Amino acid sequence: GFNSWDLCDVCCLSLFVKTPHAWRKAVEWSKRPETFVKRAGFSLMAVIAVHDKKAKDSDFNKFLTRIEKEAGDDRNYVRKSANWALRQIGKRNPRLREKAIATALKIRTQGTRSARWIASDALRELEKVLTFRRQHK
Image 1 (tube, rainbow, N blue to C red):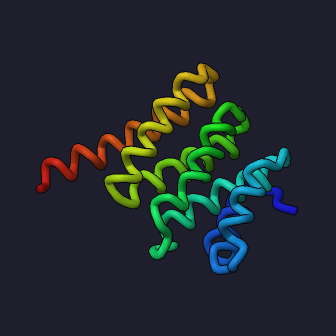
Image 2 (cartoon, rainbow, N blue to C red):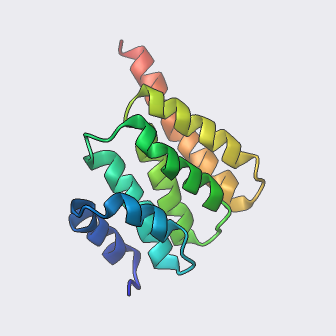
């Protein structure tokens, strides 16, 4: 029943991530056609990437696959949340950063306007993080 991005994101940040269903719902909702339900799936992926400190790197593979698959969705609220999820996964650690960069490079080859935006924005941020960490070693 979402009808705004902020309500969607607050529910993901404050409620859904705290349930035992968060991982399953993130994937399930990212497949749905409704704009804000799909956004909730990707927003939940982003929130999980930040807050689930016990998650293994391999747990995020299914999220990266969903982000890549849905990158052509040109609805503003969907593409921004898919981008957010990709960036947050990439910021967890160096191994996931490399996977997220590889995913962004694959997304860029899809050729749609939305995919190009998602990929270029994520690459810009993830490469900035990589450069910063190299300079401050």
